[in-house]
Structures are given as C-alpha cells and as structure tokens.
Amino acid sequence: MDVQLKVRRQNPEAEGEPYWKEYALAVPDHFTLLDALIQLREEVDETLSLRCSCRSHICGSCGMRVNGHANLACKTKLSDLHTDTVTVEPMGNMPVIKDLVVDLEPFWKKLYSIDPYLQPAGEVPEREYVVPADSMLHLDGVVNCIMCGACVSDCESLSVNPLFIGPTAFAKEYRFVMDPRDAADTQRLMQMNGPGGVWDCTHCFQCVEVCPKDVAPMDRIMAMRKMLVDDGVTEKHNGARRQKAFADLVGRYGRLDESRYLMKSVSMGELAGYAKVGLRSAMRGKLPPLVPHRIPEAARIRRIFERTRSTHRRRFKLHQQAQEGSRV
Amino acid sequence: MTTYAFYPGCVAKGGAPELYQSMVAVGEKLGFSLSELTGAACTGAGVISERDPLAGDVVNTRTFAMAEQLGHPIMTICSTCTGVMAQVASRVNHDADYRAEVNQYLSDEGLEYRGTTEVKHLLWALVEDYGLDRLKDLVVRPLSGVRLAPFYGCYIVRPSKAVDPLTAGREGYLEQVIATLGADPVEEYRGKDKCCGFPLLETNRKSSLALTGKRLDEARDVSADALVTPCPLCHLNLDGQQPDTPTASTQDSMPILHLPQAIGLAIGIAPERLGLARHIIDTKGLIRKLAVAG
Image (cartoon, rainbow over all chains, first blue to last red; front, side, top):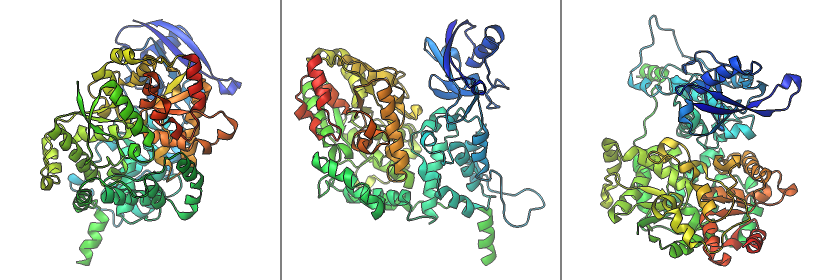
C-alpha cells in the first residue's frame, strides 16, 4: 500500500522551529506505523529521530501523536487509519528533544511525587502478605500501565495547569490506595486533595480514550474523589461541595438549577467573582427561574440516592483489619 | 416518521433557554415528533456518578424505562446528557444481572427496564434517521460565506467504546451538518473534540477559563466566524464565560451557536425565534454577515 506520512520535525538543540515534512512510502499492507517510520529512517531520511524498542506494545517507548491523538506507533496498523495522509507528531505536554523524541523527565517527576511503591504498616510477615483475592481483583486493569505517557500527552488539564499531578501518576496512586497491603492512605489522600490534586481533572476522557492498555486513569481519579468524600478527608473543597450540591438539588427538584448549584459549590469570596457573569446572564434573560422547576415525583429521586448510598462498601485494608482485630 | 422521547436536559430548561426555544422551533419545521419526558430526572452530568456510581446508573435507567414504556428512542440536545446515558446504557443494556440489580430500585414506581431503549443526540438523529438530503431540501437561506467551526463536547465523542459502539464515522457528523447548511465547516479546527473547561469551573476557575480561551484562540487562528456546538454546557463556558477568558480583552469576540440555532437560521426561522439575542457574546455581526452573503 502507498502511504503519505506528514511528520512534525524539530531540532531544538539547533534552535530549530518545528516544521512539517511529508514522505511518500510504499509499504506492505500489514505494516504498523512504527514499521513504516523505521523503513523511512533506514531507507529515506536517516536524520529522523524516534524512540522505540519492543515493537509489541509492551515497553511503552514509541508513544506519539497519530492524527492528533496519542498512541503507540507499534500498536497502530496503517490499514486501520482510513486516512490518505497520516500526521505524526511528538507527544504533547512534554518538551521535544528532537523530532518524535520527547523529554520524559517531567513525566517521571510527577510519578515519583506520589511515592509509587508499596508502604505497608507493622511487622513484615515471615512469608508473603495474605490478602483475599476479591480485594485485589479490581486492580487488574490499573496494573497494566506501561508508562508510555500517552495519557499525559493528551491530558487537557495539564495543557493549562502544570501543577496537575496528572493521569499516569494518579492511576498509580489509585493502585496503591486500593491495595490492601498499603498503609499510607492518609498521606496519599491528603496529597490528592491538595493543589494539583484530583479535583483539578477536567473530566474530558482523553486519558481513557488514548490509553493503549485500558487503564482508564480518569475513572480512577473519579473513584479517588469519592474516596476523599467518603473518608471525610474534605467537606470544604469546592469539589466535595459540588458533589453534595448536585445530589441535594437533583434530589429535591429532579433536575439541576445552575445558579443554586454554583452558590452552593463555591465560597462566598469566590462567588463575588461570578457577580459579573450573573449580571450578564440576567440582562440576557438567561438566569434560571427563581423558583426552580420540579419534576413530578421528584421525591423518588432523593429516595433512590438514599437507598443506593446505603450499599456502599469500605475498602479492605490489612492494617485496619489488624487494628480492629486487636481492639476486640 | 420517527417519534422521539424528547429529553431536553436541565440546561436547556435553565441557563440556556434559547436552546430549548430553538429546538422546538426547528423541530416543528423539520416535522420531528417530540414527546417530552417531563418526569425524567437529570442525568447527573458525571457528578452524581462521581459521588455514587450506582445512583447515577439507577436514575438514568429510570429514564430509559420511561422511554421504553412509550416505545420511542430518546432524543437529547446535550452532548453531556447523551454521553452519560450512553455510558449507563453500555452497562445496563447487555448485562441482565446488573440490570436486575438496578431495576430493584425502580420497582416501587412500577418501572422495569428491559434493555431496549436507544439514545440519540439530535445530531445523530439528523444524520442517521432524518437524512441530510431532506435537511438540504429545507435550506432556504444557505449559510454561505461564513466559517462555522464544529465544537462537539467531550461526552459525545469519548469514551468511543460507549458513545460510538455501532456506527463508525460519527466523529464527522457536525461538519456534515454544517456543510449541508451551506457554511464552511472549518475542517482544520483542532479544538473541535477538545475540552471547553466547563467541568473545572467550580474547582479551578483559572484552568477552566484558560481551556475555554485556548479553544477560542484556536478558532481565531483558523479564522472561524463562529462555533457551533451540540452541547449547552460547552456553550455556558464558550459563550457565558468568554468575556473572562485570558485573551478576551485583546481579541475579537467569537459567537457560539447551539446546533438547532444554526439549523434554524438556514431553514428560514427568524433569529428572534431562535433566541439569538439571549447570548452573552453578540450574534448580530454574524447575522449581518449571513444576510449580506445570503
């Protein structure tokens, strides 16, 4: 098959600005994008830089943006792309070293910031830690992370907020906070509630979409938001207030009333910053009605909320079991 | 003609009344038969499920069960509602055990969901059920000469496993509709499937406005005249918060149209009936440009 590759080239060391270069290649139908890039480098343009190793989506080295979205080049079959021209760019949210090679240093820094290792409490057992299988099974997806950086590349929050700890590190944080053997919950929960924490995620699903291993980092971030509220780590954070405001309003009226929602979700000080927005909306006849619409039988919605919440289960932790056992 | 169980969503009934107004006007002209689900609750917009995933699934399954009783597919006019419902449907439609668990919470009001309700955004219904040829036949004032960039809203494109399970190619629908209306759909606009910043508004307003501003700057970079969105939550930020975005004071303002408003303009509905005067960002310049071109 014939393929047109449009590659974003750059050599910052030579103070070069980025530019696009197009290559026409004839390749076998079964080729992946990585196969094509290697052929390109070996036969057409030896100056092209890219990073790769295993060629079987295990090592996570060949992350790059393909037609605008991060993926592994070795997992991308050219025949699956259905585009005449394939655009290839370095991953986003990371500095470019050269062409398709990015500097992963900021990526590793964020990962190390969450202490990505097991921190058990108490005596180290003579043999292995024994945990019920059920308490580990749900970690099955999240331990598949190969640290390729695809989720960080396409993270929308990181693109405007460098403080945000980000999807890879938070998926790893979840992996430990949900691990029955790990006992550093307090420290981990405090960190994820702080600046750059889980409340800074913009819920755009980019990380879920681009992850080549179905780790679903955003789903883990949402689960940790719930943990922060369920464990009583925060009631005051706007994120926690927002959850409560949403459930209160929908439980009362059956639908959301945006102005009341905002008033209940942010502090008085912050609310002043929205005065202009409110005024502008009022002048255009956009403010929601003073008495909110209520759906018929709205009380049923509150009843659903009350009943489902009673089914919540605490997560299983070995050290808590030990403490509770010692009190008995 | 397909009848839809119409689910307008909270924002069309609250902070963006012009969306509801324009949908009703456009629906009449297109001949859509809309039976509004007045008893259905909010989808939770991702926030209910953040606090309590089971509650989110139960409340949306309740809506599916109501539509199933009516025997109609659901039609929404909000990307977020569509996406939340699609995610819930992907869990309850094909897993009878989980559906039974969810149904337990609905039995006291005599509801039981059997897993058959289809959920469609107006955008999907237009392309898949109504047909772009029929829409084209109704265009009396082609929007020629203007560049209308598409802005999908995250929930209607991701996660693709939930929102696009059967129909490959939904990612280009908005461009196709814009082109059918006679406008240039600005294919090169990179912001089209990115985040408007709305979900961060209460927790990190600075980042929220930075994302909104970024999407608007990207639209200015490709000389768009306006954006068209199927998502009223995106509209709340792109239009409502636009004056507070970082580059607003030094850049031209960017009008933001709801999808039914763009359709309405092209099929000859007066701008006043489409609620265009209710936007924060003035749409008069855009309407003038359309009048000159038309």
